[in-house]
Image 1: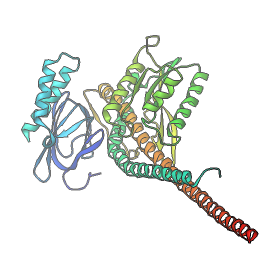
Image 2: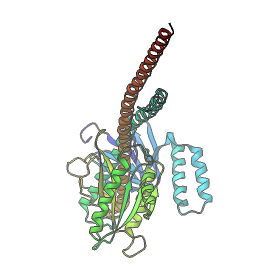
Image 3: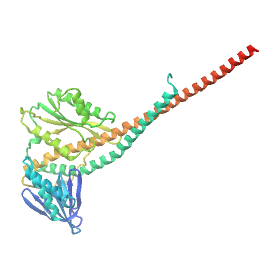
Image 4: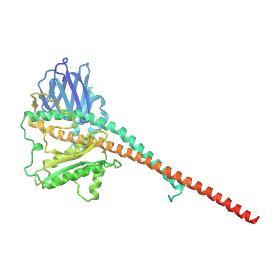
Length: 131
Length: 306
């Protein structure tokens, strides 16, 4: 546990089948179902649901890691932040054109999950634009 | 030893080519196991964090959730059997099916009817051949399960579980039968009850969450809603875990089966070579005695003429 080491948050961004990113960070911004939340050091323990949106992690080295998540959870305790999502993808790995075409396809379809797909594709495109 | 030398040679040749094939399969399985184990390891952090989160919610709230609720008089149970898509893996599929039959026996004794759900083509074939109905089968990726498959299976099972008793397709319990990967040498078929969930149960294989005290979490928006979101994912992650374990077990079983097939081929080749040599020797001996006999007969005939 990183409770006493340094003054950074130990962040883990975990997808169902792998760890997407892990390391020290100064700040994490995520969008929960209640709204955006920013987590700094010594944040109170929190367990919250995320929406399909962008997660920003300000890594200690200074660069900002941006990722798109499809729902999931944010759990904060003892300066340890875990972001769990079935699918999480780093902005640098996002295929923007694929997301664009997915967005268009989802917009034109009237399937039940069209709305979720639109949200997902939009959050991917936003994440890619932001990095 | 009725066969001719030529036929033995042909047998040796075909055994040799068979040996090459089984040897290749053994090596392929061996290299894939490592990958399968890595995948299982990569999935471990997610399962660990999820278990942690679920136990945190369960500890701090007494929320009654439909997924943890026990039906008073369970009548129907769903059983998911995780088998392989391909054969040539020794007793892998049949031992998992046997375990499933044992579980079925037990459930029937408790007066429950069973809805079958199958993952893997072998299990599907087993049920089709016996003309037993299955509700749904997932096939095509038993050695490299994806999370999407697990999520889909989870969705279907949860949906069936959440239906009211008496409704069409309702089940009151969900069991999973899969092969647990203990080591390269030992894989054991295991049956576990997946639903209703027992959150506190210790989970082997997945690393235990640290035993230190859980912090007092704040739940957003509310413990009930967080649990609502967490539990289905927890179920899906458990299924994913079972699929990954089964994949690693399948490959280990295949490697073992192919290794013994290769060894057997070696034995056979040795045996046939011996017999072939014997046949060759016998042929030579026969030829020599024929020549000697012929020469003798000639000599006898000549001396008679003189």
